[in-house]
Image (cartoon, rainbow, N blue to C red; front, side):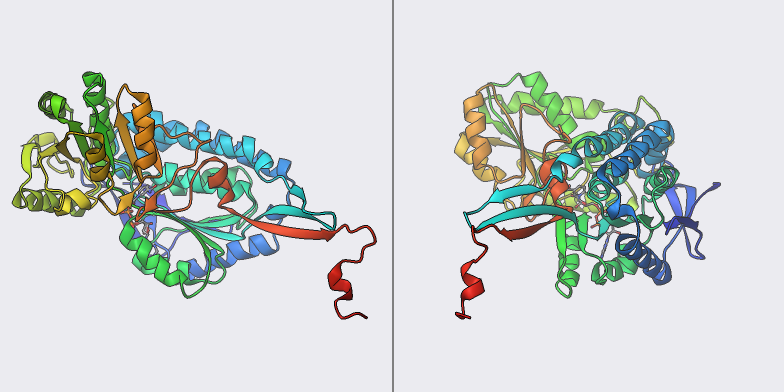
Length: 495
Ligand code: NAD
């Protein structure tokens, strides 16, 4: 272990006395040492972001100047793509094929999209409201934005938030999960090399319970953009009730796929496998419940289980690996506890449900892809997010029943519908309570399309025009344009 990761505050890389070992979940070995922020560094980061917004040049640069910086960040990510992918894989256990072809290039594309579009999104709007008045609607940056990132997509989600926040003219404090800070701290290096003024981006590593509360409570923060669990989301909402601030909350999910009997079975089975087992099921939009129409249920189940057993577990940095380890032992224990409870509540275990015996994987946090059938709709596993490679497969007969089952949980993040009847599928998409509905596909995120959850999955959007505008505030400037410049209010008292 020789990698050292300092914090990035006010344009400087700062080593702190308190350090944390960063573990590779494939091997259980220490791969790096990251500095941990204490309250002192938290204060420095907040002060630096505030000063950079209030008196620094960043919010006052022309939009074209700001765009140049954004494109330098794109180039920095592309230049370092292979290293970033390696680090993300070593830190999260996500297979290298996923980080190489998905996470890192998608992060660069998000910055590129922001760079290409934000100038249009920020254009003032002029409205002639009446003969007496016209209005200019101005899109302004909010100020200091706190970006809180989870461990499952540390680089990509940091890019989603940072690209919009910066392009809109804000300054930021970015707090990655203390389990996975490495690629966010690499992003700090890229930002630094791109020449952004000191204090515009500050990246501090630390546990949520240690520094999260101070960050969220602080009045110098104008907005919190949070992605993480429902439990933490609720805590943050409590903190922010002390000081009003803008928020977006991207929380957990218990998403459903509905598979009709007219589908191409092979396509549906293959896609449903990917929709739960990519990233070891540690995906907020993982389709952890699959409802299959009764006529094809038995065949679907047999094919699905047969293929789930063939998924190749392995060390995450091997390009042949299809499933890596879970993030840590605590997460694996949580997954096991859910499976045990599900069995006690009547679910039938069809495959997986255990730690693999392969000696090469002994020191990592691996877990076999797990399929459970006939889980009771009132059981814990049916309603709660497991966040692991565990899928429930149940039968349905009619479309109303399928929609009722899909909507019967507190979450509302995403859903999939598999059918050749596109009319029916689109009708059902209206009835499903979820922020994203995919028809005959899964997991297609586009930078131009807004993404976000309903119900307990949160509020606000990432990506697209709407996601970008979350990082702005709208000012209404009203101008008198009455013919003689004498609106009623000027003479209200008759003087
Ligand atoms: P988490 O809630 O434990 O942590 C998320 C972040 O919040 C981390 O940076 C953590 O340090 C910080 N944090 C923890 N306690 C805090 C506090 N009291 N105050 C301030 N910050 C605090 O989530 P996680 O385990 O890292 O990530 C998994 C969760 O994230 C899952 O529930 C998943 O569904 C969700 N998620 C949602 C989306 C989405 O887009 N909806 C995307 C990815 C992950």
